Length: 67
Image (cartoon, rainbow, N blue to C red; front, top):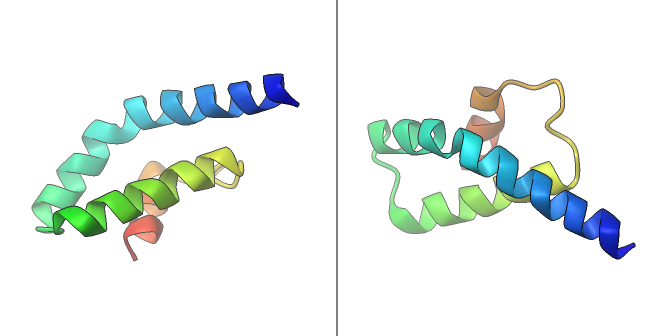
């Protein structure tokens, strides 16, 4: 169980570091306030951990998290 949890956390970090630049670019262009950015980032990380982003575009997942 712990190995699976560590694997999931590693995936979250991998996806986040890869997509963080794109996420910040979108949120900056839309003038999203800081607290909303933090909540959206939490939702994004949770979606990665639950494995529900597979097959979806980065933009779609970020837009859904911000919505």
